Image (cartoon, rainbow, N blue to C red; front, side, top):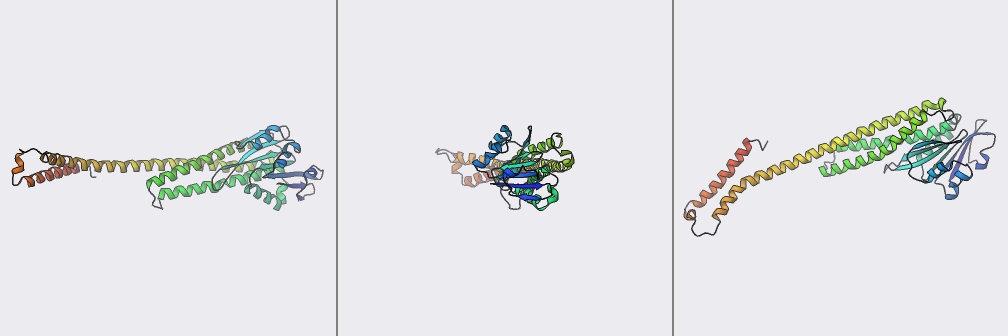
Length: 316
């Protein structure tokens, strides 16, 4: 689906303007959005707008890293949106010229919808030109990163407090799942941060000087997100190390218990095995108190070992 939005010299916003009418003299600038375009619609990037072939090619080779390319007549941006449930990156391409902005995305984008709606409802924003529309798209994209990071922080707090009383193995699995999510976020946020840095320091984008402060604000948000992601990654590392230490300590306790039990019963087993042999001439077998003496010896040795282990601090 292709939709259009045009801002005229007489301060009006027009929607659903035919593509062939967008270059008329009364239109100051326009926005064309390719939302889930068909093959016939996607070809218009080349046949109607005549964008650079490399930029058009990048629109169909998913998933490109967020970047900025300058061409003779347009600036091409590759940006990422995040799926709120899977944290998977979804590519959004943007062409920016002096009189236009063209967005291209294969999936529905709530961020594009929000930016489009804000521009339609506030005509004063349309007066700032196509670069402001590009800023709105980037700002909405970055704003949607925050809920993903906040969700991860809540999961980390639940794991740290173990409100569900889960086993260590379950907690470890959750920690590694969160680390995987953080990696996905990092692969999006860091390149987007670098992209905004390039935009801020670019002198090739028209009207950038007037709106640079807006893009600086988006860059600041990305810096904050990067710090939050790194902090959460460090927290997952600490949790992982803590649970590994707890699990190792638990295994050591189990092994120590088994060792004590083995050490206590080995001499008892030795004594029982001697008098359990089938030789005819074993003098102690004929003693009236031999059975009780053997038991007493076993318990004495076992008790003595337990007292010695306790003296060594094994039970502390």
